[in-house]
Amino acid sequence: MTEPVTIYPYYDGTPPHVAGSETSLEAAQKIAESAGAVRHRIWRHILAYGTGGQICDEVEDALDLLHTTASARIRELTLDGRLIKTARKRLTRSKRSAFVYVATEQPVPLDEEPSVERRLRARIADLEAENSDLRRRIAQLCTS
Image: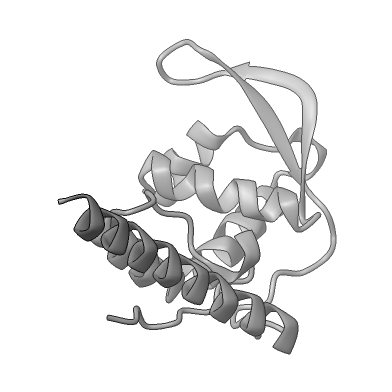
């Protein structure tokens, strides 16, 4: 069975998920649909704080986001050069130390259109995963 191809502008076009977990892949593909808008909200929020920046916990609290959602989108914005992880730290609500992020002036598009290259890499990754699963199943059949 071929999984539906979801184009994602990070991690070689595949939304991050637990390898081999169908439910994890489904959840990752579902969040991929709204991730661009969430990245945009986070970037605008951090940009509003200027050089003071924000820690992930402050973003979660202000935008009412789950930690997993906020931290993943912050990581993507950092990979994209739209956020910078500073050397400064502040305490979270649970009194743990966390790095401060500041926004660059580069705007975050609401509907990022991946390049042809990214779409092809996503399709290749899907086919490689399917091929790997088929090889594993054949090996299991041969040994039983």
